[in-house]
Image (cartoon, rainbow, N blue to C red; front, side):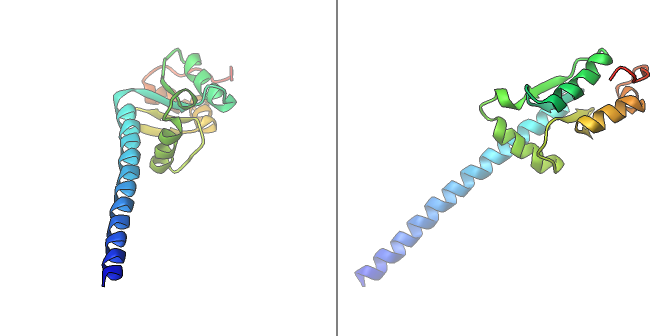
Amino acid sequence: MATTTRRVLVSMVTMIILTIIAASFSVEASTEAAFVKKTISSHKIVIFSKSYCPYCKRAKSVFKELKVVPYVVELDQRDDGHDVQDALSEIVGRRTVPQVFINGKHIGGSDDTVEAYENGELANLLGIAANDGDDL
């Protein structure tokens, strides 16, 4: 009887520990997702980037051409950058960087941003006069 009681007790303690661990992962994920969503809603232009990434540099150069300054989150320079990237992946369905948002709308990555720049959609979203897009 004592062995059965001990097994039940060990099982219950194990379940409690696993529940606590699972809950902590859920809190982390929701915290990072909340950060991503708040950042997107708090800034006109947001780029989730990595400082060394050539595609990120290309996307950022588009905004430099337009003479507008985006809010850039350099994931490689944050302690929680990996977790933020995981949350971003859950939100937009892509894990790659850059990921660009304008007025809360997901524009996409580097190629999407350059294409929107070249066809004038980016300038339209920003409410500025379109450039000819030949400089990129």
